[in-house]
Length: 296
Image (cartoon, rainbow, N blue to C red; front, side, top):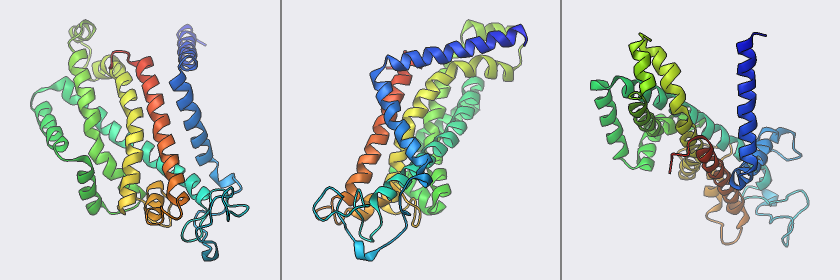
């Protein structure tokens, strides 16, 4: 192994060790990672858990209460919904849907915003002015209204839903990255690289991008929670995930009419949604302190 490879490996190991030590000293970070870790593991290994199919109906077992309540049945830990489907199984498989949509939408919109923000911030001029006008126009429209309009055009389903959320969220990353680039490109090390004849592409990739990634990661992490809420909201309104796929928003919509008599149908997916978003906020707050302490 070459000397530079050894040094690089040691540096990476030190960074990982430093991040773990910082995480262990952060109460918010530990709680967030613990909660989200459990949710992710349950979603990943849902097929191996002793649960019935989330689509399996039994009209003879409609609105069975949780196992600890009066009238509860063995095997139905969180009860059943109005079609006799197991609520626990649907909450578990709904976690998979929400996490996939959240990660995919953030990755897609983040990639678009990162590229546009880097180019516009570094080049400036007409491209930058046009990008900012587009961003101003999109930010002037209420986000949920914009997503509903785009969803009507794109249709329902997981892929259209990811596209809808990505189209409406890339502006957040583009504006953030552009602001970072405008600040970084005036620094001395960038000017020195430019004077030395380094190509613009190399300056962006080797000097500017690494210095913008911290703020980008923090905002992207926090935005996963917002995207999961947006997915649940659209599914609740009937524009997101459609049966037979399972979604927490869809479960909330199914249970809202029977909330007074069968509270468990909507309560448990609501609790799962709240815990997921709460854990992501805690992790994002820790990442903000660790990666970018300049952020308020």
